[in-house]
Length: 326
Image (cartoon, rainbow, N blue to C red; front, side, top):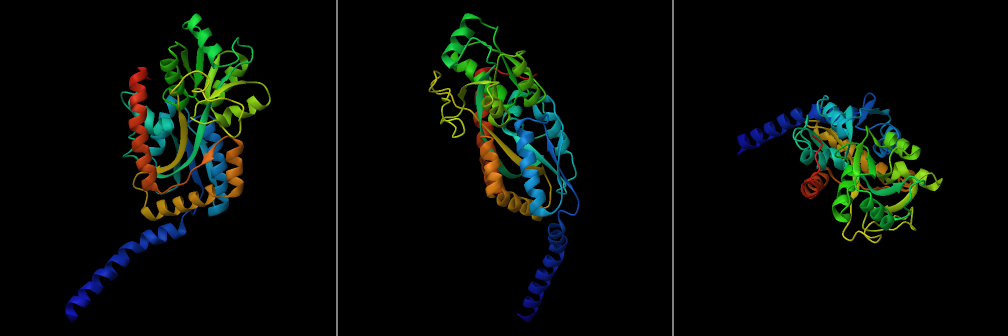
């Protein structure tokens, strides 16, 4: 019995010694600046949200969280770079519904595995997409847009932040349900697409609300509808696409923070705790609300389950629309 107690104590001591380096890692983390890879151009929604969260994490954890934009291929270039980064907590990734739930159905081959190559930290925000048009275009609402598109098949185009983004799929879903043939024009991020929309080079866009809302407020873009099931509190007079003439239409964008797979569990726990705290901060919530974004914090395992559900949902949308990025 005495010997058994000794051996049990020896096992516990050995386990404590083995765990010590990991505990020390979490305690010391972060000991230098942290990079947040954003897979789209500066000025778009993913970039805006990453900068708000990065500034809050800088205050919370006492080290700089720096945004690094790596745009292209519907977010795949940035995702692949982040997936291959050292799993030490010093490279994070601001993922989207595109990079982590849509692209694997849209692309025949991805340079990363959205499940195996990443450790989910938490969802950051849920964001409506906003159907906006250049004010010079001859349609003031959804019904007029559908009528015009049907009378001019293939002549109305819609921009997006890249093939496979929620902005792209929102347009494809609209094409399917409204039975129109608008042409997709992909960009390397939302910001350059909005620039061309403002300039009249493209006709409409299903943009994430944070990168479109200021242009709506100053009258440079015409809001036709929101893509969610309910109206946005930030634009209460703008109808949903469903109530504006396309029954059953609903699409929501989401954004979340990831670390490379293999990042030590104590570092994951520390980052999740910090993210949950900053997402509950009144100033952060106000900044996100001003952009039309709804903060959303959860445990890593809850985020992982949400991603599984979203992957199944969007694979059906991609299949039904016939969309492809290859």
